[in-house]
Length: 303
Image 1 (spheres, rainbow, N blue to C red):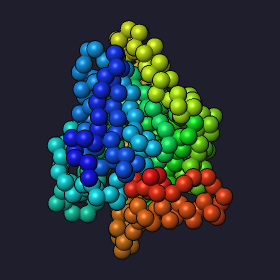
Image 2 (image 1 turned 90 degrees about the vertical axis):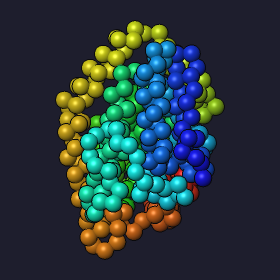
Image 3 (image 1 turned 180 degrees about the horizontal axis):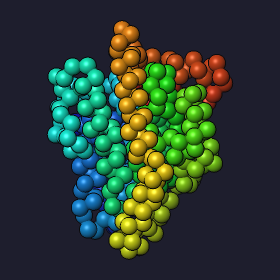
């Protein structure tokens, strides 16, 4: 199992900070240790006057398979210092009180915190970007995808209306968001580009160099101008209902968790990495969809 200190790597290349998720064995499934390490890295980049742009990447074959629902490093019952809000420590709390407090902090709260970083951020996505992986990419200002990138949010299979950072209707439009969620299928990078969900698609071999070229060009712009422009667009998006919409859907998300537990299974409706993988394979066989199996994140579709 990767030590907490190693789950995220941080490096700089001139004015660009590169933050790399580093659990490749588990397709960069996000446990809390990774979430807080990402927060440390984003905070470090924000505080460094020599850093103008931040790139978020994933080590190994995939960007991220989502939240950790089944690896040996899953740490849902471990306490961490709370940073994104004032909810109490979730550990030892009963029922929905625990899950709501934890997810308010490490999922919705953290993603909102990173979205507000006053420097441009670019998600450099390759391979699988599934469920919780979408949350990380969507928190960034730009997404540059490799031509092998695949995107999905299959958690409706758990009876849950999408991931906690519910940006779907804003990043792809309401009708496409419904299809994306109802079917739970992967869409490829070219389809994501036509939906406006990513900015560019490049060959996998060119992904890093192309992303760094874009980052370096952005880095030549005035720092305050970039920060204010980012804030202006974020404010406009919030006026279109993004923040309030996320708050309302976050409540529905937890109604679903509570329902799953109430009917006698657990907040994930009895699912783990194995069952999600099997359900995904069954859906692909039934519908002729694309994609390959494996993994330990939300979808358990990447390895």
